[in-house]
Amino acid sequence: MTILVTRPSPAAEALVERLQRAGRVAWSLPLIEFTPGQDLALLPQQLAALHPGDLVFIVSQHAIHYAAAHLRQAGFTWPATVNYYAIGRSSALALHAASGHAAAYPRERETSETLLQFRDLHRLTGKRALILRGNGGRELLADTLAQRGATVTLSECYQRCAKYYEGALEGRRWRDRGINTIVVTSGEMLQQLYSLFPAIDREEWLLHCRLIVVSERLATLARECGWREITVADGADNDALMRALQQT
Image 1: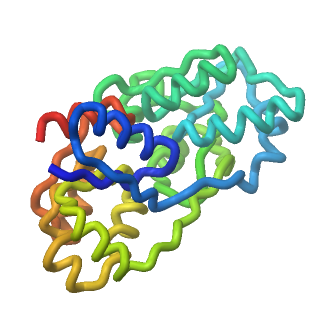
Image 2: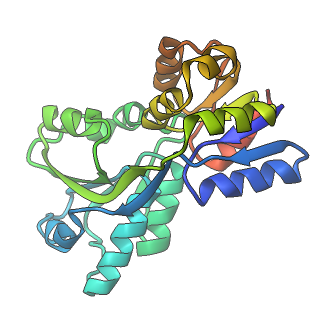
C-alpha cells in the first residue's frame, strides 16, 4: 500500500511521518490551506453578547487557532458561563488548550449529525448559539439549531483556500509512485481531488484507488463520483486515520 494524504498542513505531514515510522510508504499533497477569517474582528463582541447558558460551537481546530490568537491580541478572555461544543476531539482539545474550558463532543462519529443527537441540544428556545467555523461549508448545524429555537450567529474565523497544482503533472507523479490509497477528510477536498486530474488519470488510476474518508456522508459522495473501495475512519483526527489505514 502506497498512501497519499490530502489533508492540510501540518496535519498531513504529521500523518505521513507516523505512517513512515510504521513502515508504510506515504506522501502528502495538501489540497487546501488556511488564512484568517473575515469575522475575527467581531469575535470579542459576539462572545460578549452571549448570556450564561448560551452555546458556542467549534467546527474545527483551525477555528480555535485563529480565534484564540485574535482574542489574545485583543486582551479578551473566553467566557466561562457558556456551554462549549465541538465536532470532534481535536477541536475540543484545541479549545481546552486555548481557554481552559471543556467542550462536549461526540465520542464515536465526529460529525455534526452525531453532535446534534445530544439530548441537551434538542430544545433551544431562548438560547443564543455562536458557531466558530470557516468560510462556506455545510449549513446543517446552523439550520438545525435554528429549527430547534436557537438564535444562531456564524463567525468566520478562518478561510479555506484551494492550493493550485498542475493536474497532468501531478497525475504522472503519483501514478509513477504507485499511489493506491488516498486519505480525504472533507467533501470540498474530495471534489477538488476528483477535478484535479485529467479524465484519463481518473479513469485509469484515481477511481481505482482505495479512499479513506471520515464520514458516511463522504463515503456516499465518493461513490457518486465513481470510487468503489472506500473505508470510513472512526474520526477525523490522525489517530483515527492511522487506525483505519492499519486495518486496510
